[in-house]
Image (cartoon, rainbow, N blue to C red; front, side):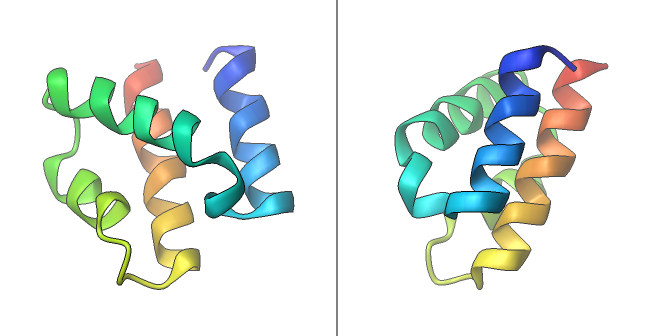
Amino acid sequence: MNTSMKNLLYAVSSDGLAAHTAEVNQVLAVARTRHVAPLLCDVLGDRSTPEPVRARALGLIVRDLAR
């Protein structure tokens, strides 16, 4: 996992997803392009899903992108 992704996860845990929408959307776009964890991408992309669930999905997507 690179430093920028790690920093994003820390920032999201501190500030929430809404404060980092652009970065989260960028990670989501890369994950969808690479066909990484499509179900998790759907969860992260669904703004009606509770934020803790979306944040967890982001963490798992970042983990999978780092592999």
